[in-house]
Length: 141
Image 1 (cartoon, rainbow, N blue to C red):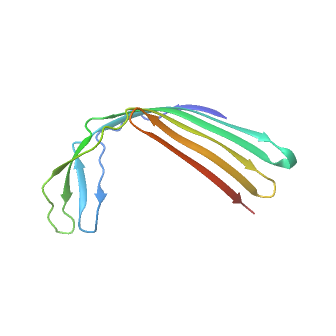
Image 2: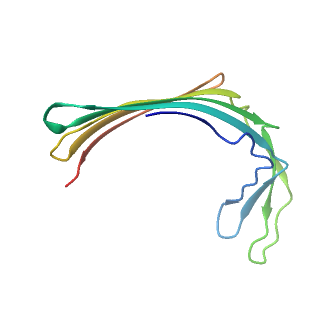
Image 3: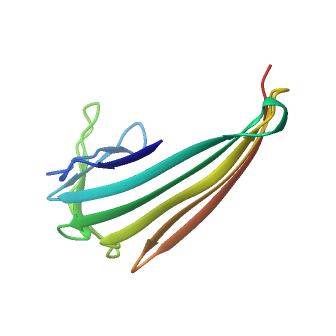
């Protein structure tokens, strides 16, 4: 199976609320983000000896993120009758704008219910790189 697709082009006026404790809620404001992601995915299944199967899979994506400002003006909101605090500004590092996202792996399924999986995930940008790997042994009956 081969698949090509894209995500929605924008996330205008993103709004998040973060619960820090039972008394405080952190509310960011004046923050906007837009993003675009195009991807190409491929899966291929091969029959192997004695009825097992080998599944090879991969995905490559290009992501473009646009953040209006890497700072957030936040304030503690009132919860349960407790008054909020004065707003303050949090400064963050500038994130990568253009990213290459990759996934590649293989799963070998045996007829006795045992399967083995290995997978690599990577995110490559001009300001950061992230790598992760997964290994799994599964038995189903």
